Length: 195
Image (cartoon, rainbow, N blue to C red):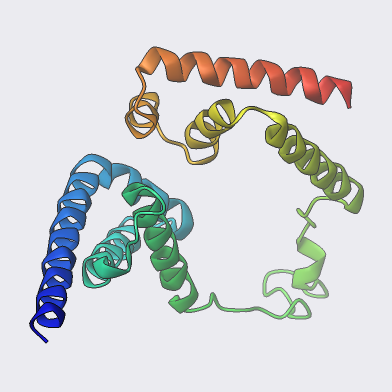
């Protein structure tokens, strides 16, 4: 009976220790990457106030659910996904913009409708197909890169992180990140030319 209580006490101590460690990692990640988290939210909501709200909501959620962080990914990766979800939630909750009927007559010109004044700015089906094919080829080419090159390229270009932050995340010097990104770009160019 006493060994069961002792085991239960050890589990509680271990859980408290893990939470304290995760809390320290969370505080460190927030202090280092808050601007990057804000930038990530801003890319989605395109409004400084909504971006701040999204980041604040995400950080609060991360703190509340810190016990769900299992350490399978980096703390910054976990935080980034929470910020992304928070920003998307903000975006979904925004009121829709007012709609106008294309059959509405223009006030200043009699006989003309709103649809007569609007140009179709969407890409043509042909350009959409080309763009989609290029994107697929690029993603396939990226998958052929070594994991080190692919990770550096993704963090720098796709996630938009500066070299210093990428270097910190990967645990390598700035010069190594620059070299990896340059090699990755060079290999991608070669692979894309071959297609």
